[in-house]
Figure 1 (cartoon, rainbow, N blue to C red):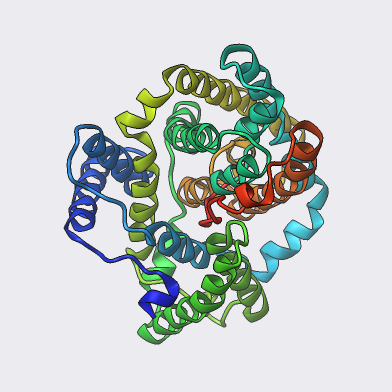
Figure 2: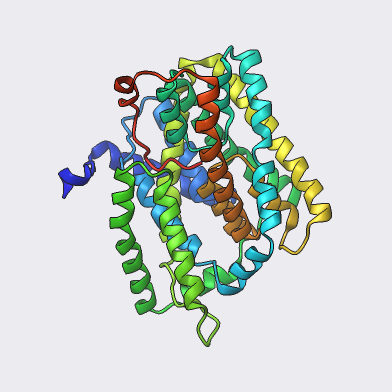
Length: 379
């Protein structure tokens, strides 16, 4: 089984990395920072790598974290929520299209200050999955390292900036207490059934992953759990018939934080300091543009809890899992944030190949075949 699925071993460096990440999460939680089990591990792991500590990321840590997060977020899609999303599909599609607007700012900046050609600038600026954009880069003669660096920095910097900007505007973030109480009050049988469901999804998800389906470790558990939750509805006591054990979502966030922290090591910044500086500026401008668009939309579009925060997280050019986790803990309307990011990712994956065929010259098949497979990188 290990050879077939290529499951990496858990060695001393991986265990040390987990310990460093857990300490970072505890410190961030004690300080009262937003998303403590995501941002704390990300910062701690990034600092540890920057100073040369012998820490390493477990190869399947991101996949496991995304799978658990997908199941946990899918539990929010009750029949009432799904009905509301269907009724609001024009708003969701509008948000998904507007979420691509900062890409035009990025293309101009990467061409003007980073010296990239049009194909490379678009692949660096589009808010898609890092692995999918790197694959397109290899197939069309663009530097995959350049694309991977800018896309990784985009997600990591957005995750760092968005929580603090939301705290500054909202004056504090308060998660939905009913979600925590529901998980805490679930019976052992319900929790066991939910964990069994997550385990059942692992096999088809791994099968699709081996066939290079994009973002599959997040998308399949999320969609499958959302469909099951919508079909089952709520019990007579108003509780969901499924629930994850308390603390498991925090563990999933820690694994995701380690992945993000691995993109912030010092060598990555030193490899291309000018490109990294331009990428940071693009992220700052993109977050500002999204905040303004969210404010304008909140003036005319209501019907959701915390309209500005909901639109802001839906438009933010960060990873779907990270923005969904923040929506879950901040009181924003989680289903709308998830639905918008799913639509945005579908638009990017549909537009990017056609755009590359027009802008870039394909490389020979033998070279393109060496492109790294999709690892479920979050868009």
